[in-house]
Length: 613
Image 1 (tube, rainbow, N blue to C red):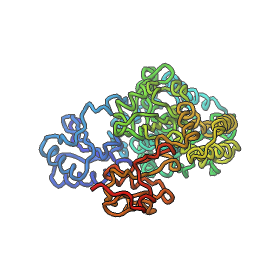
Image 2: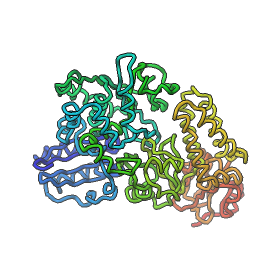
Image 3: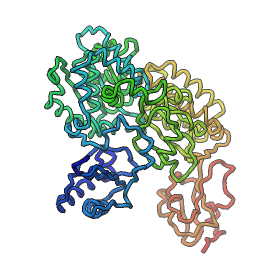
Image 4: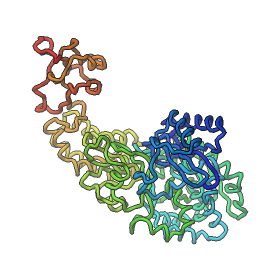
């Protein structure tokens, strides 16, 4: 920021968890104590969660320097070496051409990690509320909707429905109650997803500005931001933003001196996954149990309290101000023919550089995983990426060149979803992955639909049997039959898509199911019932580390003599394998893999073996 020097610390939940609060407090104290001409500010997350805590030095000459993995010692180096000495600290510096950031295109995340999310002045200084002013003082509702249609923006909550078309339906709907509502779906429940949280914590005003523009376009004077209660920092910053908006006449009666008025409320969700479904979300706002209802009528016709309602998710609304500022046609130049703009993803799993990213539609999965994410942890082999959470599916390595757009991902059996992207390596058991997601979906089912409530339960029981080595050949056909019935018989989209993780793993990793069923073997050595921990005689030194960490005393032996593992009491926790410094404990799976070079408890008791000196 030219003319003003400051030090910014990423203070979203992820940064705070990594130690950013301590870094922020020490920076503030040290800068003040030395009388340095820098102000220390808190920002949201820039997205490089793998390198947190993050500190950015913004010099008065306009140059900026980003530091990663900063601790208290790092603060001392930055303060003395850079802020006071004028020399950047090479050991902590993240290069300007850092691959993680180089291929991103930040529209939704443009302000995240840049501005103080609790300062409306900083938001306004970065073109904040310019789009709202433009809309209220120079555009008709129809013109706003036309810009949304020109942009080609599709809903970023998972379904991908055209945003402009949805707004049109709500605007044209006749209200029997005289009310129309605008709702923001911030009920982010997918495992591994943290996109909405990061945006709300890093740039809440962008989301709220998008909601106001939508309200003007559809003819609404009241709205709700529905955010799960597990996001306390996001809720806190939304509340601060609402107070600031009211003080600036950006919320309430006759906004900016125009006839447009709008009231906005925050509704905290209790964390039910099903409340991410729009009709269940509305029931929750009304104080009812969060359960979906039959559609039609759709929310655009009869939604909250039987009034026409427009529901979009956090990322969709955060795109709106930028679209109005740049124009719909300009926004549509980004992305592909049918998938315009950018998409925010939470990149997680077995990846070297995980975090929040925003990429143009049309980039390949391989570019995301290897160019941006840096490849697989430990340089293991890439196996698959799980897209779309419990409603999505697994895309295998051979399809890594598929483009990130709605149609291409749907063709693989996965979906774009809200933006969860969990990377898996060769150590991942795909049958166990299917079991995990079915466990989640089954436990989160609201129970209204028989096939969702009982069908997913039966599917889960089969998967558990398979992972325990009790599977039968007929189980695969039963899984496929149940999946088909759950898909067509469930009321809401969450139930209809619940079988997707199972179907995609069956489609691309059928051999792993066959191996579990026919050979009672888990090649990835993840299914506890199918693995054994064995001591390799030639490698065991009798150091007793395994015996010390074993919670059931299954690992046993005398000092400097080969140890053994009692298979009857072993619970396959893996602590012995982790503790062993000599690679003397191997993991085997399947009866045929039992090593000849292992020692059993009976052999140990007979004293027929001795440890290597």
